[in-house]
Image (cartoon, rainbow, N blue to C red; front, side):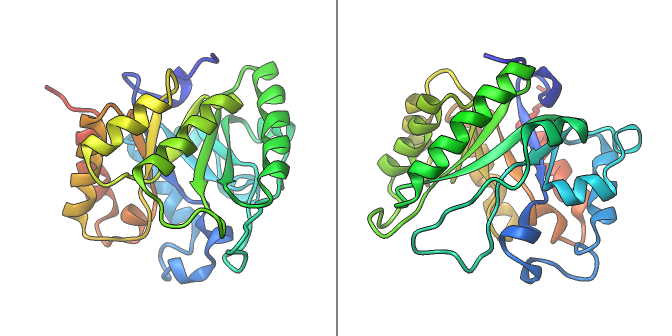
Length: 249
């Protein structure tokens, strides 16, 4: 396995996710959060172990010496209009990510989509190239497609296992609903760390409860975006989440 220390602290992960502009469009933003400089400035706090963006944002706004937080480039993406049988094509190479000084790369696999074979092939090549350069690959493992149906604990666990089998270094999955359910997901992921996705902006206390449940189940952190930068007190909310992921006692 590759070295994860550049994107972790105490073997835990707290990623600030800002890849939603491509994935969801402007409906996620207000006048403040639509400005990448605002979100980049949040990384100066030292709370995060990584900032996740697509290449265009990184190229125009990320300054390693200023923002400090390690850069993670999302290598594939699609718009919100592709839903029933989603395919998220690669839009950035590992080499481009390295030129932008990324410390890790990420890729979404829609497990169960009829196009999963294309994504498997792209992901396999990314793992080969990234590992050859010594950088980690984070897999967004999301079960989607007409044959998948409602996402159950077993389906989430299946997606995590697919990430392990395909060579991911970290898998990012949805919270499975309870610490007991997440324990099964973590077990199926084997030796690779599991992080939970923050999802859409929700009740902050509920978000903290999910993160605590995930950590209690053996997860190693989370990739949280909208539940931080959509909030008026972005840094305050981030600090509360960081205190769960990196407890001081």
